[in-house]
Length: 318
Image (cartoon, rainbow, N blue to C red; front, top):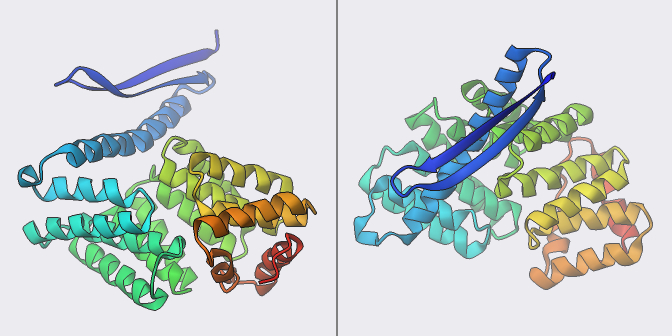
């Protein structure tokens, strides 16, 4: 038999319950290649699963029992709900962590991420102020701990939001050097490569990120959406629809996925479906689509125009 099966489990020894389990089936052509691949996948999956478990535990704990690390986990529990209120509550918890330990680099990195979420979902009251707060928190995180891959990723986010794409790419590459199995960073690199015209490499990077860690909702909803957008600009509309629908299946209220789904459907002349996707955006967050029409993320203006042409074909006249 030329196949091998590896089963990995993560168990809470204190309470004797499973946190995570996964099975890996591989062709045994090169044992060392199989070993490296399974190791990468376990490392990439284990950290988020541990974090999710600890976030839930901290969310159930009494405030008087919390220390800086606990406040960080509770903040992440709120922040990764991807709502305006969640971001605000998350920042309150991260600040409490910093009140205890002002040198806590990861707390600054999480504050930066909460601002990035607000920008991405249109929750920021002032885009300029939020970008400034994102940049300030990310820079402080990197200053305190240059070896923290999340801090480097957040600085890359800050560069991306201020259209400094080359700096964003070099910084996210630094994050990947620090943590080669970091799916969030791999997906962000794919996104940046797509935005700067290296579409095939970007699509490959986004797909690799999703394969590396398919079970992390806050990664997959964004990376599937960015994958859908990349597929739209290279005219692979059916694949774009599939990716956008997968993002929506992860989180039904992830409006950027509904938006890009409408664009892809518009290009396919499936107007009624496209209009339904736009209507979902407006029901959830009035004005969301109009705000998106002012967003021109691609370095090549023709790519931005192509997205908005799909929006027009979807029936948007705002």
